[in-house]
Image (cartoon, rainbow, N blue to C red; front, top):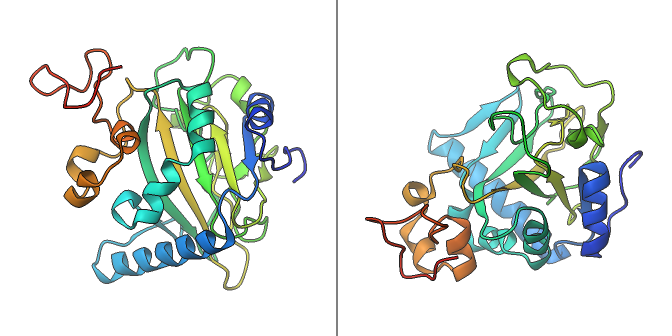
Length: 264
C-alpha cells in the first residue's frame, strides 16, 4: 500500500492517519466468519435484485445494491461497530446520520469511475474538518487488479473539486486502496477518490460503503420511507439515531415534537 497508512487496531492511530492521509485502515474489522457471511449475503442480495428486475448496473460491469439495512441483520451490526462510532464521534460529533449504506460490486470489465469527493454537493467554501465520513467494509480482497477504489492521499487538504468538471480517467496521483478481506477503510468526506478498473478475468470485488454525515445534512437514502418496518421495530437506540429518528436541535421532529427518544 504505497503512500498509504498501515492497518491498525488503535483508534487514536487511525484518527492520526485520517488527518494526515484523508483515510485510515482498521485491521481485522470483521472476523473471518463474519466476512464470509457478509460476502455471501451481498451476493445473494445482488442476485435477488437482478431476478426482481431492479438490478442497478453502471460503468460496464459494476452493480450497486442499495439500502443494505433492509438486506440482513449483518449490515445493521456493521454500521454500529464500536470503532466506527468512535471515529465518527471524534470527527463529526454526535448525533450523526447514516446517509446511505450500499454495496458496490466491481466486475471484470468495469471502467474507472469519475473522480469525486463524497461531500461534493455541499456549497463552498467548506469549513475546516469533514462534513462526512465513509466507512468502507471489505468482504473481499481489494487489489490493484480487481478494481480497488483509487484514492489521492492528502487530497482532503486541497481545494475542493469542481463537480461539474470531474474527469472520468484515472487521476495521475491516484493509488489503489489495497487491503485484505475483513479490513475496514475510513475515508474523509473531502478525499478525492474513484472506482478502480477491474482487470481480472472473473474476480468480483465487493465494497460496502456506510456513508455518515453531520446531523443537519440531508441524507442520500430517505430512511423513513425505505426502511422496512421490522428493521425499525428492532432498531437499537444507536440505529435509531443513525437513521434520523432522534431530534437534533429543531430538526427531525414530528408536529414540532421529538419522538419518544431523548433530545440531544
